[in-house]
Image (cartoon, rainbow, N blue to C red; front, side, top):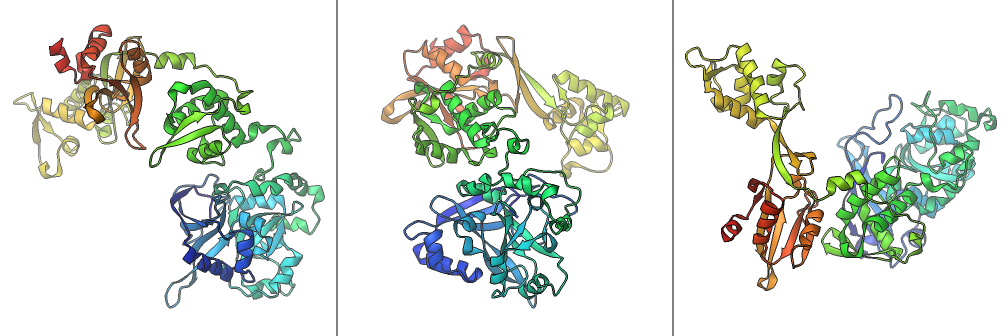
Length: 607
């Protein structure tokens, strides 16, 4: 159920007035549990209980389920996750259908996570032991069959006093040999049926558990995994438990354990390193994503962050992290592939360890304010110099020419493919003349030019659908001037632009060409500041421009970021009105065409 990615919609603290009701509701679902048990082990008095409202994102899970298994009907997609003050998830609340006659009736259930079971083993008294090879298949979506599970002694005792209906009670899955809980599932039988089958009064077969939560799923990843250490330490036993020589004849019945698990390839159990499986050295940390990412972070700080660049926005740091990751990690490692999941959570942990100091710029925007360079963790970190090719690409470069690039999209593709089949979606034209030639071939091959006036085109059905609105369409020929036909076709095409620089390089950028904008703005105290924007539209590096201007201007020059979270742009700010100096800098010193910069017209008259 938690194999798909999760999105946190909101989070809040449970009010004191609701706290008692929550604990009582959990105890109702889990018979025999008392609120005092929860207060002592999971939710101590005086500490907050956090409630995260999450939903599962659409799309395929990270690892598809094997065989012909189908998703459960009416499977819940939104949950309330109850965590302790450290954001460790302990319970997931969601609604289940308990009756459809005479109308659909729902019941809110509170599913415990493996963290909760590790913390309070008596929380779920029903538990079944199975082998490592079965756990692998459960993680891929299969159900646990009664034939491949063995109830523990405490489970058989607890079952005598339990009364529940199908899908209402939970049981845990324990890894054989390691004595470690690795998952929680809903029991697919009622209590009477399960008692009879275990007592030998009925056939010991059928579906026992539908797994709703397992180690290594997305809900497990919300926690810090610190309490999973016992499972990891005993994970070597999983390999031994799955060796054929150690399986008894009774345990060999696990060949029929899952409903869709035949002929599956071997896969590792979470917590078992590949070095252990190969008999190698399990102390090698290269395979631990968290440790690898920490090394990337330290290398980035030492290689790309200097005192003058602080405070540095988290978004800017992320760009440097991606660059360093490509250089020292194969394949490149991103924060989403670690247990931290989010860069903000990782930075908070680094601040807690005393490595960095964070500051809040505004709501949802943080920056690194200071770095403890004397920290011993920097001792063995090497500085990674800038890539020569990348450095040359980001060096000071000025545009000399811009060429529009016209791209065939889905709307105009039928027209161009009618002339040349290879000119499908995504085909690029570097000039309007090339587009004009293709359109001319189409008009000539279909004889659409008017006999009376060759500059008039009689539109056929394809051109009518492409160029005219619904209100303009009618049966018959529609005459249109050749120039108007061509202009309308260009307007329907997607447009990028290619910028050619003074150093001979070029760069193709998305969207239409946007010139640099120079604007003098007034700050607090009637102070003037000159702002240069839209460097992205010309593929220019604002940092390189600011460094060059700093050597010329006798004033403060800086780079700041503007825009929202999904549209961050960089601009260069210069103290005072510097339009006259910028006019000389762009148009005389670097010979930038005047159409590439706006806002310097008045400076030209002053000059």
